[in-house]
Image (cartoon, rainbow, N blue to C red; front, side):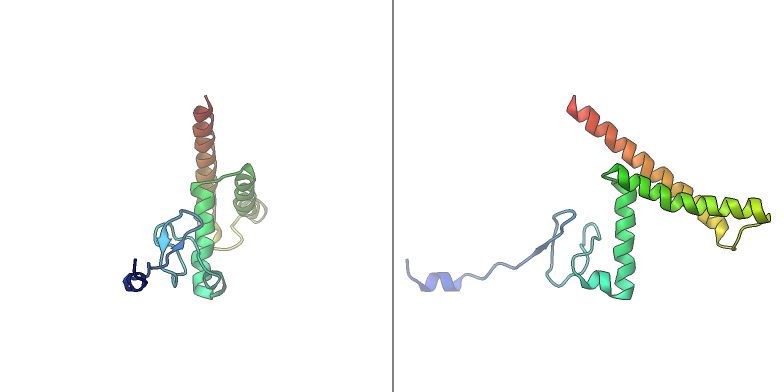
Length: 130
């Protein structure tokens, strides 16, 4: 086989694999096209991109909590918001800030979705072992 045959073949394009879903992405991308996971350090350092990276973490925690510690962390984080708002209502007869009213339903929804997702995952794992 002649040596010049290998030189005529085009080099394959490099793809960066997402660490969350294993989807191929262009090397210069900062976020995965399929799941939105941060792929580069730039995505967590730049101010605007940091919001997307943080949002990905919350989405992962809500949609696919892998450990009980994640569920407990969400309960602690959002539960304190609900308790703080309720304490303001009881102690002062009004919410501490005008933002407190929408925080309660958002926090309750986050707690409910994480707990529901974790329990559904536990049922799937238990059924799969039988």
